[in-house]
Length: 166
Image (cartoon, rainbow, N blue to C red; front, side, top):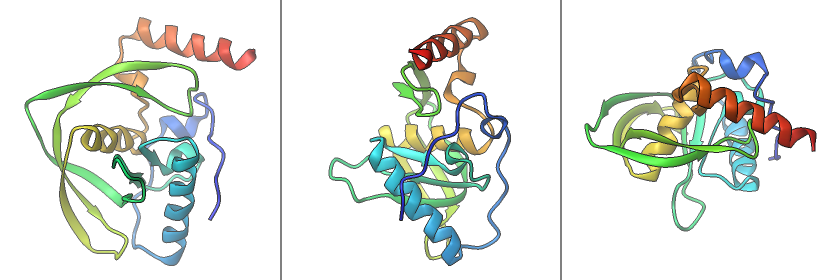
């Protein structure tokens, strides 16, 4: 298990959809373990494999009060989303130093392959739902700033670049 480095926002991989996982193997489980270590080191409540340069549809989410409750997901897809929305300040280690309020459905039902390689459907609410949707965006080649207006996105990306030069 290891903490892996994040790829920068400008890297094409962050803007490219990730490949589906064919089966949950020991190699996939090892990537999840590294992802959890990396997420905990941020600290954060979720991480998608493309953020560390692994172009597979893998995500981990842990929005629990007591850490250690990470949900490991392969090929997650939203089946149902609530009509009620929730606003939350989102950020990404791939674009450090900036954040923005993003509005997403308050609750989602997600289908994914779990750590045992079985298809699972689970309901996520609140911060859990926000994080799951944020990670699925990464798997689809989107970063949270892609949900902003072009002007706001350019301003945040420029601010992050300026902070990185310091």
